[in-house]
Image (cartoon, rainbow, N blue to C red; front, top):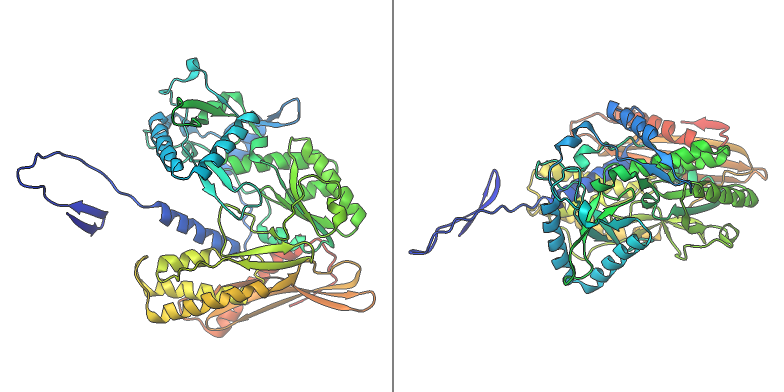
Length: 535
């Protein structure tokens, strides 16, 4: 047999033994999941680095909002009931039972090799049933051939760094039916209606008394209308000697493309309903997905704010948990307190970060925790994978991250294949950077930028460039009543110089533009009284 790489991928070819009976078989090998995952990681890396605001919605996004508003209602307890955001091409859905069955049997065989994970998987599904978030489909409703009965394959992800559940069951709503159309293909995604991460964390730094919390199982607190629940069917049995049963899911489900928008839009509706302007703004602007980062200047007012937030979200069936605060009074008599010394500000637990940003509430410092693999990266794929996991939304360690960006740019100039070994020069640069990266653990930055009780609050903006890169940063300078001065770095952004040769004055102009965009995005979101600005 021969293995040959072609323009269409790898093929296996060869002859059969003489005299042997010829049996025709065909097979296809694909290996795309790793590339897709890496592409998504790199995309997330650059999204964090963006410094633009695009508030223009597409026609589909506008239609999505109209659909949600028209078809959303509340039950007697106040919980939201929504319909799936189906497109007109929903009629193109095909049969999905066979592929879901094939995927489930494959999952079952894999889980049998890992008993501990299998038990966690069983527990997860059991809790799902006990909470009434799914039910078994009775015999006369099964009908596996109906195209509007979608059977969704499911699997799991394990994240040891998760603040909540280590194992999470995820649905693959992108799995194709026999017509080549998946459930996600017929769902509208919806617009992004929450603030960008950099704005949320920058504003979080302006509160003297700060707390964080998240909404328990946020997606699953939103019901799916009965008429659409059959679009969310799964196959399951806890043990191999039992019959495989069909279940339908009752709630907004992690894995469907519209889940994020639907859950967040429900929060937005609660914000619009409340007459408390402060709470409304917190729900609208201080949440990133289900994580809340907010606070106040007075301890008593911050406690009242916390209580009002719990009450308002409770009206929609949302419960807050994993409380963390820099003052014990803020979490006194509160259930579900986060006992960890560190609170992750990664706000994306499904991706394990190489470098993650954390808040130490006891000392009230921001710090970085690094997780380096023992294997030394020596290919383009491995290095890009490591770089894409560097998480620094505020740019507080920009001088370190920019080195990684320059290496990334150099990799593209090398024009080598994904898994080809790199030149000695690139490997040496990367090795030097990688081994020095561990020193980032020693960096501690005050969370609070000390903006309370000041007679003067100044914003200082700086921009500069070199032949390799350019950048911009914002500082806040405070003068207290006692004339004490404090200066804090708020945030920064950097860019690698373009490949096309550009003069230093030209790059300095690029840096000035970057500073202008950074200031436009950040200053107005801080909600502090700025007396002077210097550039």
